Length: 113
Image (cartoon, rainbow, N blue to C red):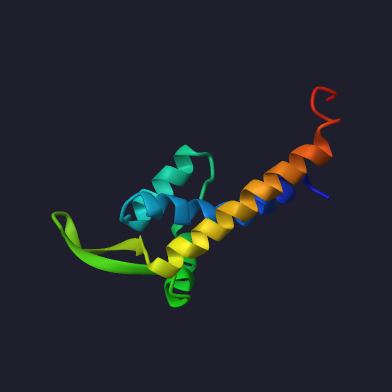
């Protein structure tokens, strides 16, 4: 088993949570979301981002607005719907519980590496 594959799967598992969290702060253009994720060391490419945004939009969690751009065609900016806000809230509750459980189950490993 390769460590890099496991690490990549862990990042993918929290990607949806991170994307929704970023969009909850303000309407966001996909390349801005990608840039923020890169800053958080969660590297994502457009080929991953756009299908995920489409899936979240089709699930009713995201809406979008078109904005004119000075450097090309209008851009699609995403925002959370009311369902998206409720979904994110539930995800955050689940995330905090998961972090707590993982911390408890691995507490004997901390400092013993």
